[in-house]
Length: 269
Image (tube, rainbow, N blue to C red; front, top):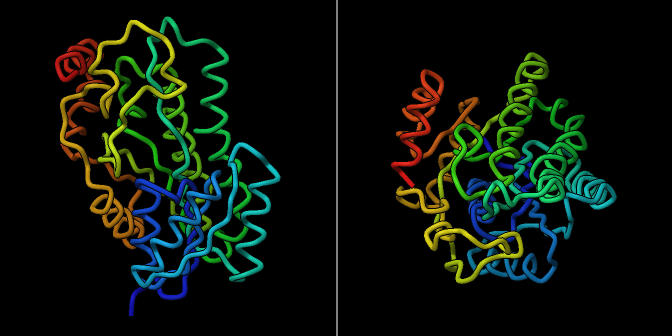
């Protein structure tokens, strides 16, 4: 029998992309999964898709930037299932913007979603997770270890997620909490992004900056394969998951020589 049989998993940003793949990976292993996202229509469509696959999930519309939504998400989860074993903090978004054109308000808006929303969900979940030696999965980014060009405030928010994950490990790991930081490169989309998003309004960017990874030359990751890796990493209670693995070389070089690290980032973009 799977170790996830009967366990309860909450996945934010669970209506599409990597979040939906993670939810499916846990559900296939017998977990009771709650998917959360802002748009109720996308949540309903995702839940219908799960049912056609023979998987049952609960869907709760919730915006992680709203405290009352987050409180309701976890209250409904506990009310229905009576426990919580895994929180996957996947909700978030990237940005395409020249750094000189990225305003303080741009930083504030993205931090509210990518960092403060993640912290808000984690704090709400912690009492339940600590009671069962549960898991927090924070979906960061390669940009949370080495910044890149043309993505505005995004690297700063993901560096914050990296630091917060380490703090959780240091302080609450001894109390039984498992914290997994996931640092993925660009992930293949269900539908290609065809036009700039609202956060991409500034000009001056090369056309390649609007591609996945802001034009970094790397193979797109399969969300299903990455989701399976995340589940296995939780089972072994790993601290970090970096994909592709080769990115570790860049991180090491960046620590030894920032100049060489910057040179390599430019060569790869």
